Image 1: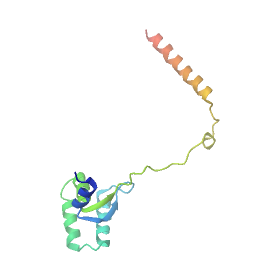
Image 2: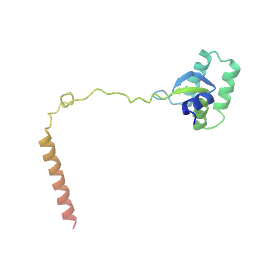
Image 3: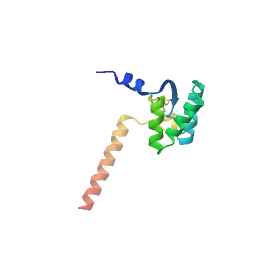
Image 4: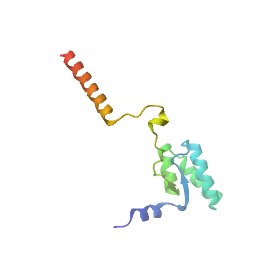
Length: 120
């Protein structure tokens, strides 16, 4: 069985051109502009760029994205954004011990049990 990456690369018209979609402006015109600029930078002819534009704008937003994926490589930026660890000190609160947390959870459970018995 063929590698799916190889299959994808074979179907992309300009695999050497990469356009970032995730984390960028998702407006259809912004996407068109980024792809056209990338195609131009890669040396595509005005005719090819017009063919891309005509195809991409011949449908809805989903069709635009499918066309982009057929014409260029898409940088999905699948890596999750890393956030710095936030401490209770950063939030200006006192640290809660595991015992205090368990006690708080028990109190909530008791309140839920009381509410359930009141409904009966």
